[in-house]
Length: 545
Ligand code: NAD
Image (cartoon, rainbow, N blue to C red; front, side, top):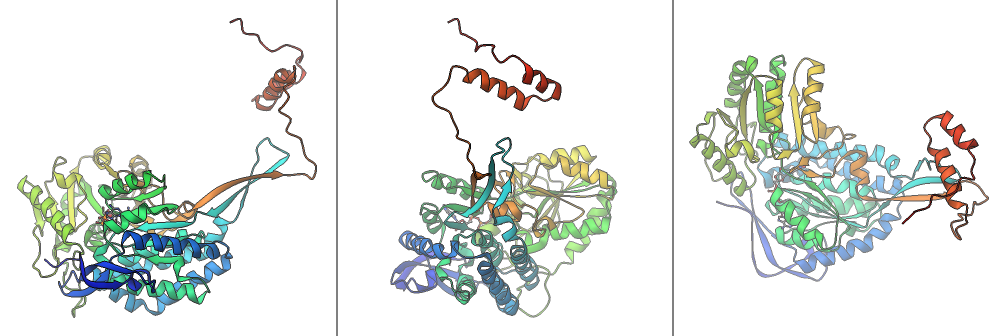
């Protein structure tokens, strides 16, 4: 099976393609790249060695000085150029995405370009507001003024997966970049062939605005390159990927105590109540399971459907799923879904499905891998799945809809929460109060009521998970400030100063301080008055021992 893989280069490969422009260094290893929908070889990409990673970080550190000193208007200019370029060259960018991922043109446009444009627009409109110094109360220190300043951290590394080749790169770098950091992105080796095209977009936007292209660099490579980046002395890491590699990142970053934002896998529940709008729930479930052919961290991997609506729901999703058209995206015709991007993932999907079928699950649609040379797995529906099956507990990350029948809300919530993961969740009901009640009980980083996936597009909402789905947040104010040092500054309110006399300690200091403490923190006015007029002469207590 054709798959992207690391091989020894036949001769020295200029590192130009690793970093965007010549450094004089050479790479000794290359990634052979294939189109996953056709198996056709696309070419090879040099893999950055650990030494090249260190050199890239050093260049980023130098470039970051000018970037950190830039005005918000200048940063907005760079993001504005990015947006303009994307809109002008949208077909070309979609072509690069389709070629490396095997997904359909529609999923490339709506699932990748659209979120990135949404994020850029949010940054242009909101970033300055959330990054400029924020004045806060100084509490009872009335003679002082307090503020929080959001300083850049330095160089931020983003290590990202293959499922959204464009979105994972651009969606990740925007927040750290806007916050004044230099950024190094390490995309998955599975989609390395697109990096050259993406680098051109970044280089053009930065140089047009007068900044060094070293401010944002893409380094290609496998896990070895990622591991070198983790240990390279960057100030923060955003890791998007699998739980297993998430653990390796934390181990690697422990030596330098480099903080990490962890965006890991999911096994998201989607609950359909008996009073749900059937058509709405069916459409959202098809989207939740089959958008991007299920290679979606927030895919609806487990559907919990109330008994009262179960038969009608299953009949409708079965009919619509069976009618989905799958094909090679850049061949003539319209396709609903394309290919699986990673051969390893295709193997995981099939292993989990066959294990479930062997243990009594029934495939209503699909259920076995498609014909090659491309990597195809058809949209699949499994029923009669039991919670002890591997497929009910492990992330599939593929086009498999698991439908569980539940008796009531309590059972739906109990089963939904019975998972190692906690990324996102959905609930469908016409009863608003019921929807809110179920949402409040779901253990997840977010809940979308009567829709699928839109939490990710509402950029003011933080995005992330709990439990094995990770920690830290992307998007919104918190996702932006995550790449800053929130520095506390306390300064004088008045021109005159109040000397902070601590030493030498006087004989009455304890008694006076106790009087002040009680006056300051007494919860009732009558107590305050009592403390105010209480005789202050009572002495400090003595210890007998
Ligand atoms: P992966 O963990 O195999 O790889 C992710 C990235 O880490 C790649 O760039 C890879 O080269 C790199 N890497 C691998 N080993 C490494 C190491 N030891 N040190 C440093 N870097 C290393 O994940 P994948 O298969 O590319 O992606 C699928 C996973 O990503 C799924 O679990 C999915 O749920 C998750 N994901 C999560 C989100 C989210 O926002 N929570 C979004 C997309 C995908």
